[in-house]
Amino acid sequence: MTTRTTPLSRRKFFAAGAGAAAGVALAAPPAIAQGNTVWRMQTHWPTGNWYYDEVFVRFCNRITEATGGELTVEPHAPESIVPTGEVLNAVRRGLLESAFIYPAYWIGRVPAAGHLNGHIGAWDRHEEMDIFYYEMGGIEPIREAYAEQGVHQVGPISYSGLTLWANRPLRTAADLQGWPVRSTGAAGLVLARMGASPVSIPGGELYQALQTGVVDGAHWGSTATAWGMNFQEVCDFIIEPDLLGHLNGEVMVGTQAWNAVGEDIRAVVTEITRATSAEAAAHFLYRDIQFKQRFVEEFGGELVRLDDDALAQLRTASMAVVDEFSAQDPQYSGRLGEMLHDFMRQLGRS
Image (cartoon, rainbow, N blue to C red):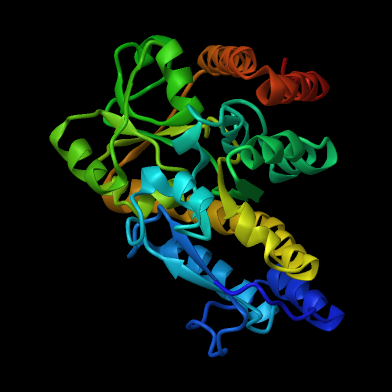
């Protein structure tokens, strides 16, 4: 990676914002000569999923186009450069410049990442999530925590909701007892508190695990993202409502790589990340609606609703997990936990 940068014109910057907001149609990688800086960006999303190209590759192309090639972002498939579980360390060390990935992978190392992922029962709408991170300033302690790892946290990318898929109907809190479910991050800790038996299974092994009964359910983002993993073929039920309105991925860049580009380039990356989150939220939600209908009509699946008591217990368990993070990590998660409790009170959900 080279470090010389050319100032980005105001025209290019505002064109970038307009392009992100308008949602330019997906195209092949831009035919732009590589500029002064190249970032390799690895994701955890398997290739072949509809959103790998429509969201991830498109995001990389936007940055390249918006900067006129001064920054070229190369999309890379999972495991193509480093194993998914080693991405944070690879970005820190400069083995990989950037990543479009899932914060739950490193909450043991960066507890504040759990707040970036989102907590069950927290926000229902993208605007609420945006308020917490950007209006209330929740993104700042998260960035400080990542900075200690030698990584700049650019911001969250919404994957729409957290949808439970199951091979048993889940209607009450009692139905969660002993439920073997593939789960990760804070959601897994919450489900464990509810008596479920969460296990971690790599994405590439998840279809077979559901098909053979190794687990009896799973979540992989929203209905639409799980559809890309073919959950509709191996699950009988979708559980409603989503346990979280917006479950987030993240965009991270190594501190050295981030500081090597100019402020104008950094501003474009930051603004395109924020704009992409809002667009992706609508993108996924629209497909959630379509895929749920197809699940019932084409696959004979059933939509089952958790009762209000189960939802209240899940929210209580979720805030208890927030408090666990605060106790483990008072410097960053402690501040975030106080902010989230305050926000829940303001929303009337505490």
